[in-house]
Image (tube, rainbow, N blue to C red):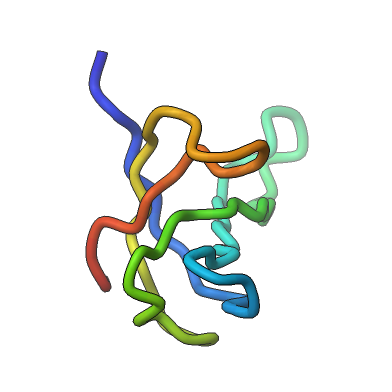
Length: 77
C-alpha cells in the first residue's frame, strides 16, 4: 500500500526535531453542496530542525517514531 503524502503549513517548531503541520482539505458537502474547509494538525519528524513557522511542507506517512509522531517531512513544497 502506498504511503500517504500531505501538504500543509508549519504552525509550530518549538520541539526538538518535531514540527506541527496544519493540513487543510476542501470538499463539497454532500447535502448542502457548499464547499467546506476542514483542517487537522499532524506532528512530523524534522531531523535537522530546518523548517520554521510559516513554511509550506510535504509530509509522508511512516512507522511510529514516538507517541504522537507518525509522519516525516519529505521536502519543502
